[in-house]
Image (cartoon, rainbow, N blue to C red; front, side):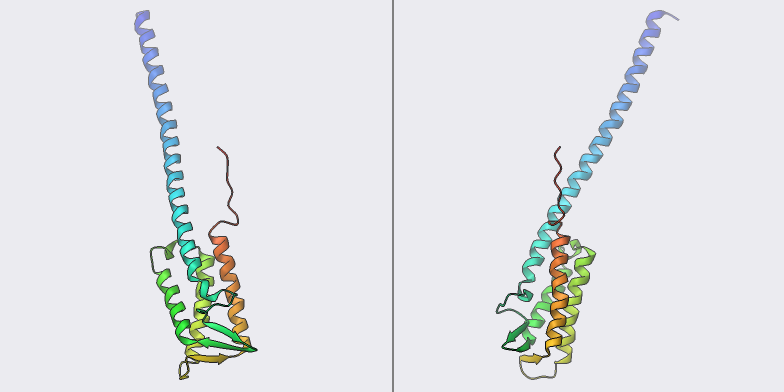
Length: 168
């Protein structure tokens, strides 16, 4: 075989191998960039969902507010059936919205623990004709015992507590 043909074949083979290797690495890099892009979009959507959900939780804040389903007046605790139903409906509506699917498992469990407790109280006192019903201090304490883990789950689920930034 002629030397020029051998050199040309070796050069062509080298070019082909180099092209295949470069193509492999480019595809790998492109796939990694695409995955990172979608991960970032998901994170941004999830963070937006947690922000919306956080605002829904305002009525059950430990700080007194007019929208709270359970209020303390003196040494007595009262359940406002209308506000309780409104909060329960907002929780359910949020869960079944496009944002609800973005909540992590811990947040969903804590959310339904709080909602179910309020639903149980509404069922227990549903025959009462008053809009504000006196409840026991234990029922109010049980509510607070369920509420605090929900707030912690939202903080944790939003990844703001454990967020790590890496320099490129």
